[in-house]
Structures are given as C-alpha cells and as structure tokens.
Length: 445
Image (cartoon, rainbow, N blue to C red; front, side):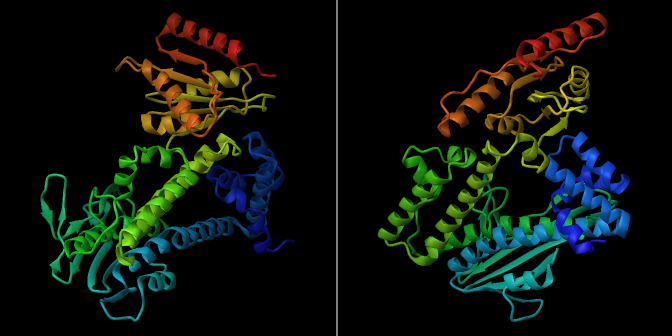
C-alpha cells in the first residue's frame, strides 16, 4: 500500500478542483477515474483523481479534508512569499528601514518575520518604519448575526499624523478599510488569512487612491511635501508618451511594459530621484508587472480555456456539456440574465459533449473571456429588460483589440446567435433555429 504522502503527491492536480474532490469521496478509485474522464478532464488529472479516491478508501475522508487543507495552506504560503513579501520590501525601501512591530509589545520582529512565524489571519499591530509609525487593524467583527472585517489604518510622520483625502476633498487621519460580507458563518482561518494578505496589499503598498490611500501613498506624498524629489507616476508617464497603460496590463504585454518601466526608472535616476522615492516607483512597476503577468496567463492560448476556467482565472460561470466527448468541441460565450441549463441541455441533446458554455452577466467579466480568442461563438439570451444586441459586437471588438495587440492579425468574425425565449410554439421555433445555427457553424467531426 502506498503511503499517504505518496498518494497526496499524486493527487495534487485533482485537489484544486472541488468537483473532483467530491467525486473521490463518493466513488471507488476506478469509478472516480472514469467519472473524471466523463467530466472531460484530461488523463493526467483523471489519474490524480484516482489517487485521491485511494486516499479516501485507505485513509478515510478526513485524510482528504486534510489534503485539501494542506494544499490551500501551501498556496497561501506561496502567495505570501511571491506577492506580499516583495511589496513589503519595497515599502521598507521607502521608509529606509525594516517595518518593525512595537505594539502591543516590542517583539524584535519585522512584519515579514512575524507573519512567517505566526501565519496570522488577523492583526492589530503598531509598527515603525524608519521615521514613520503605522498602526494597522484587521479583525473579524460580528454585527447581530452577520460577520464582516473591521480594518483601520493610521500613519504618523515626523511632522504629525498623515492625512488622506477622498475624491470629494474630505480629510481623514484614520482610514476605515474593512468590508461587509453579509455572511452568517464565521470565516475559516484560511479564508481570513487570504483576506489579510489582500488587506496588507491595499493598506500598505497599493498605488491606488481608492477606496482608501495606502501607507505607501501617504508616505510618498509626505516625502514630496518635505522637499524630496519624486518620480513621475507610471500612469502619468504613459499618458505623456500617449501610451495606454491599461492596455499594457490587460493585454498582458509584459515585455513592452518592462521596457517602459526601465526607461522611466532611468529617467528618474537621471533627474536626481533618491532611493526612497524610487521605492514608490518600484512599487508601481511591481504592481503593474504583476497585473500584466496575470492577464498574460489568461490570454495564453497554449492553455485550454476550460483549464483556465477551472483554475478560477475568470469571474464567470461555466458548464462542460455532459456526455461522450465529441471529436470536435467548442467554447460558447453566453450573456444571460439567469441560468445556462437550457443551453447546456440543448447542446447535450445534439451530441456536443465536452464543449463548454461560459455564462456571464457582468459585462467586463465576459469581455475578459472574449479577449482570449479561444471562443467559437457569441450567444445572447435576451429577456427584454433592455436592448443588449450590441453586447455581441462588444465581445467581437474585445477579442479583436486584444488579439491585434498581441500580434494576431487574422482574427475571425465569430458566429453570433440571439435567443429571445418565448413560450409554446415561439420557444420551440427558437430552439429549432439554434439547431440550424449549430449544424451550419459547428460540425461534430
């Protein structure tokens, strides 16, 4: 019998898919493998699901739960090291010293050291950063039966409390940075830890001024106010050069963005910007590069779209059409106001097993999928609430814009279908026209 560690190593690919975890808990190893294949997972992941089912059979369901928890914690550890630590290090460059914890007591630990040792999921700490003092609170709050996150950021400089301003010019010396979830269940430690890392980014080294201003933004403004020369903001430099920064990030143009960032940094050094002020520019570059790399992964055509959907790269719903996998499969991008089940059932009845219906209501989320260039048709489920025919054209334009920016000049005009559900004969007639649409554009072999 293989050891639990050996099986866990083999089960890693399946552990990230909740539906496969459920399969492994309820099927024998052989049946779990077959079920994963039936759900149109590739052979390698199906074998991983088989290993997960062996864990359940030989070591029990609790061992699966522990395997999932270990996987989640490993991902959180990796996220902390790769995404949070670099941002804190750049903030420390701005402050000219380590971010040291001094309250509730002086522990002789930097924030990074403390988080590495404790794996904290909430905090209420006072810290020093050179001549600055930073107080950051991030805790669970319960109001009646609902749980939310209570956050507060305060930054003091050598000349007093640093003041943030909102879009209306109102001034705040204490910024409340929590959010309300409206959930009646206390978040798990892993959920809280994930939220804490997001809070650390937005409170400590975010370069955005909304919904609140981070410590990095407050400090760079204070340095400028005290006479230090600062670099131009990255977005302003791009605007002056007539470059669309949002396109560089959302189209994943990492190399182009890297060259622009290099030019700007060289200019800033030549203009006499010192290391501390350069730290903020480096934060902006780091965050922009990180966002561009994330979008580059979304637009990578070497990765099947269904794999990216299963990995949670897009904020959309999707269903793989059940049934035996057809020789040719397709990706249908659907804008709808409720449910995609009817579309999936029609495709299953026609034998499109393995094809994918990607459904969205939030338009920006749907446009992100369109940009991949991996959709085969755009569908619209119209309910007469408002006219949305142009959404199909927007999807085509989004695909053309992204693919052209990536150097793909041969971008096809994708087939489009609008379904305006009615009742009785009208509805059956619409279903019949969808059949014809499929027969005309999407052969099964």
